[in-house]
Amino acid sequence: MEKKRFPIPPFTQETALQKVQAAEDAWNTKDPLKVSLAYTEDTEWRNRSEFINGRAEVVAFLTRKWEKERSYKLKKTLWAFHENRIAVRFEYEWQDEGGNWFRSYGNENWEFDENGYMEKRFASINDVSIQATDRYL
Image 1: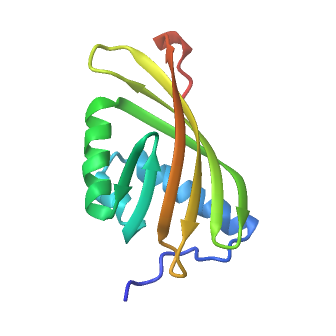
Image 2: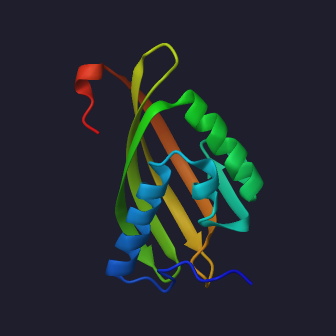
C-alpha cells in the first residue's frame, strides 16, 4: 500500500491550490522520476495526441519532452475542482534545439485516488512561436 500523498481528496479551495502548486514546482524541476512519483503506478494520460500508461511510460515521455523543450518554465493556475478532480490552465515557455522560443498553452483535467496520487491526466496543448523578447515566465 502506498503512503498518502497530501493533500488528499476531497479537495477544498485551499488543498486544490496546494496540489496545483506542488505539480508546478515538480514539473519545473524537469526531473522525470521525481514528477512520476505523483502519479499512480497505472496512471493514464492523454498528452496532446499521445496516450501514456503507467509510471515507466511517464518517465520515458517526460525524458523525451525535456530533451526537446529546453529552458522549460511552467506556470499552472487552478481552474476548478470537485471532490477528487482538479482542472488547471497552464502555460509554459521553452526553446527548441535551433534556439527558437515557444509558449505553450493548455488545459489539464486531473483525477486522484483516495491516497492523493493522480490516476488520470488529460492535457490539451497548443504551441505559439514567440520572440525571446516576448518571454515573461
